[in-house]
Length: 51
Ligand SMILES: [Zn+2]
Image (cartoon, rainbow, N blue to C red; front, side, top):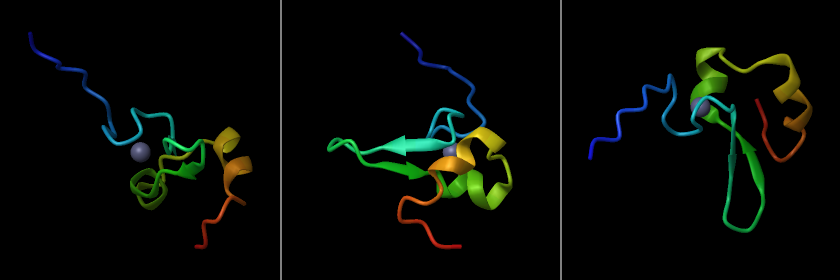
């Protein structure tokens, strides 16, 4: 079985955010740096992320 999902960002699966097991949501740093984050994701930006 081959898991060949071609995500632009395998880390967050193109969602732009990563959720920790404890429920904390982080903005995906890779996407942030690459400028892939969409507008609707920026509202999560005030989590603990500093640019
Ligand atoms: Zn990402």
